Length: 179
Image (tube, rainbow, N blue to C red; front, side, top):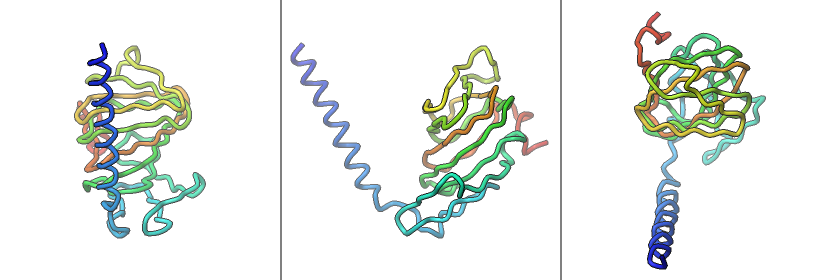
């Protein structure tokens, strides 16, 4: 048992050190201000300075997202979705919204900021196979994982990751860009 505890402590210590080293190594890898222009229809927050972004919710500019069904609004806070750089965006979903099964080419980290988002995994939207994710909930979807969501009430989520990032619908007929 003692050997197991020592091994577990060593693994934990190694993970923590690796995370700290990776963070330190990436600290200077932020994209240049000129490279932070976004590639979607959403407006982007202007950097406050060369090394940081500080924004109040009232300063966000929301826009329709051609890649999402009508009703959703998106604001890009940082990054460029078609580039291999960190990005942060927010999505507002109206009440009664459904987002068909889809996947992303990169890991998706989602935090529910308000409301409840019902999320499920699979190739078709099935409300019976979802989990209610109230404000404060976090999901992490691996690249290529088919998932879907719906809302009963309005909800806002924040999504972050490292691009390139996009959306591919499992059923191409569900893609609003093709209709």
